[in-house]
Length: 498
Image (cartoon, helix red, strand yellow):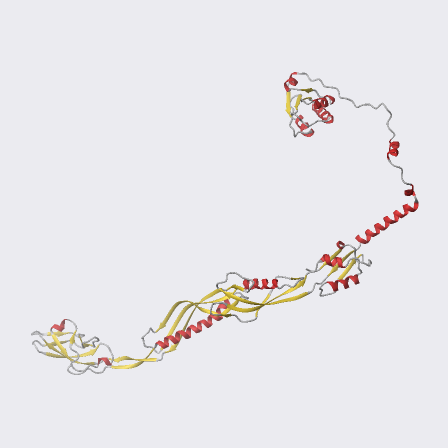
């Protein structure tokens, strides 16, 4: 017959083996137990397996070398084999179940056995007085528990408050990178670009050309041919700064050596420099200088100058300094607007960071009644940030916190008491005042222990004497008619407002 062999392992139990039986596909199932197995070692387990197999319509046998397990299986009516091959070739004959042993003797008298086992009760325990005493003690114990656990109390306290004030000397510098408890904090930079102009009257004067000089020059022919002189021919004096004149009309010098022609001329530039003495205009510019000679028989005249206002170096310096001072003053007013509301501005650190452009009109050495200057520059200043000041204030306040008190919130009031002043090393010093509200810290357990078993009046008096309070304690007892506070702390609720 076909036999399904199921190999068991050390972790199998009655439930897992029952499940494996339900997987069987044939009528005979052979359970192979592992060596030194400790599973299914009870007769009851094997009987339940046999009943499960019978319910499923299966024949059940086991393979084991354990003598104890073999005897247990035979007592449960399960065939036992040593090898699986032997079991598969054999016919399984079910063994009868070993019945329960029958009792030949009559059943024991349990009441008699109980009387013999229990010792006789002492006579004094049956006395009425003793029983009444123990009953009274039990009642008193119950009442004591009621006294401890039935009443409850609620205590509302108003902890004392106070204002903590600290004056903090502060130092800010660009070399400092973090806030320290000794009062040092970093200085930060803010900047802005400003363009402004200013005009002032000049204080200098200078002579400037007004009218041009004129006169007559005489050309002399050096050749035997006729020489034409076009209008605009330039004649001049000699030297490092020649004065130049131009002919006013076209002219012709007759042919022949020594022939002459007088021609009117006018100075090319206005001014008194054109008033030249006789025989000073002796140079001819251009190609005519090889054919003609020239001179002025009479002095030239009519050249004049006039006095005109002009800027001086002092005018430029004064205008620059004045406009720069006005821009710095404007920066002192405008730069704080770029900061947060509680930042501390250092006005004595306002300076020019960069000159973007500087334009004068008119240019240097040019005449004019006024001088204008336009400056476009970046100004900058130092300041202390609100976050750094608040951090220093918190550190100083915490370092001076009174015992038994704690801050009610993180809100700290900061007010500058001395104006910032910056020394030659770039360190700005000032003082500010930091304030915050403190509240007494009350231990709810200590409050409850101070009130145990007291009357409400006595508890309130004790609390007012022992703890810093701003108002009388409010004590409510439940039930309201109960005269004392509970005798255990956990029945007292304390609301301190901390």
